[in-house]
Each structure stands twice: as structure tokens, then as C-alpha cells.
Length: 157
Image (cartoon, rainbow, N blue to C red; front, side):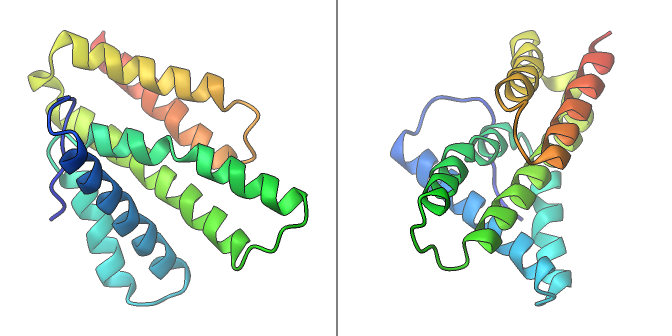
């Protein structure tokens, strides 16, 4: 099972390394599913993210990986050679979709234990993400994050 961190700010570089490792693991799992390479192990990895306690920080990091996608897109537009660029973009989009799903699963499961600030942060993050990425070509990721925002907001009523 992937060990996740919630909203704590402590840990610095060690936390960042764990979060980056989690992101890489989820990206590999998404790629494995697409390539039909050991899909049951890949699905187990993704399920472990969804079942992890307080995966919010890692999932928000994965969702925020959009900057990398934009840089890659710019390189493609100017004609720079990118090996497997489209596969990389798709893998990252799928990882973002899975991260949004994990936020939803964890929020529904842990709602009674989250602080009021954590609940507001979840809603704010989802709404801000959707607004900031409204022109993104990854419609299915935006739809998932929008759905998570709606479900979390409804849970709060």
C-alpha cells in the first residue's frame, strides 16, 4: 500500500521525495494499464492510492503536474523532438484522473475526521483547479475534478 500524507507542512525534502515517488508509481501504473502490461498489479497500485489515508497532498501534487505538460506541449509546438511525448502526456493525464478519484474516495471515507479547514481546502483546491485549467484539452480530468468538488461540497451541507 502506498503511504500518503495529508495536509501537514512538515518534512520538507523527505515529504517531497515521497510525493514524487508516489506520482511516478501512479504514472507507471497508468502506463501499464494502457499498455496491457500486468494490469492487475497496476490496478492494485491505483486502488492502494484510493485507499490510502489522507492522500490529499500527493494527489494535489499529481494534479498540479500540469506545468510539466504545458512545457512538453510547448516543445512539441516548436518542433523539438520528444520521444514518446504523446504517451507521456496521456500517462500524466490518466495519473491526474486517478489522483482526483483518490481525493474523492478519501474525502468521502474520512469526512467525519477532517477539520473544517481541511474540508474548505479540498473544495477550494478543486474549484481553483477547474477554473485555472478551464481551457485544458484534458476534459475528462476537468470533469472528474468538477465532480469531486460537487460531491465534497454536497457532503458538507
